[in-house]
Length: 243
Image 1 (tube, one colour):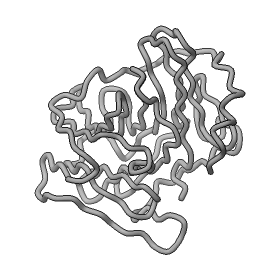
Image 2: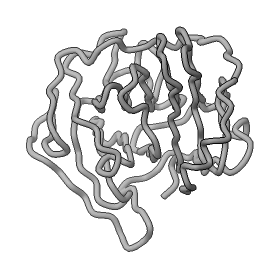
Image 3: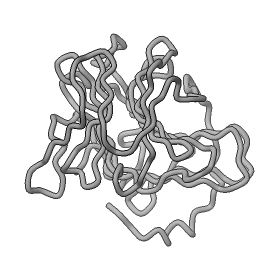
Image 4: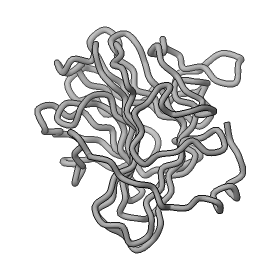
């Protein structure tokens, strides 16, 4: 659910920070290819070209079977998540790093693990980190072994990390209107990374073999990280597995 960005004026930027646990930051994209919204990268499976799937007649359609956890961020975060310096504000997830902060993290991780095999997970990004050096991300899995999305410096990366390495990471120039919804989908031994402007029509950007990293029992994480910046950075998410 969206609310006017003027609501952000009331945010304090004074969150406390808890331990980072097994959180690590990806410093770069690796051997990345850059492009616009079209085109599909196929790492280790066949196929090529851009794939777009159309949903039904509702407000949104994932085009897949959603994982059995969701949140519209209208209530307490600890119903679903273990929060670290995050808040639900205006029925959205708000992650804020204050100006001049040194190495800091804000985010949420689901308190339970879920089965991603044969399922998909989706989130809507309302506001990205802009041109700041902060990165925001949506991951399934722990630090060394995960799949998901990472946005930094205007580049949206489609991450497949195994044993702390992520060769062949693909990225596109991020546009908030075009890439508003992020979808991660595992089906029949393949993972696909897709985006949508409206939650109904999906464009696939990357496809790869399902890594053997235990995707049948993973937690999901939304977060923001920065190793220091002069400006305050605010990232907003909404509609986790809800359309």
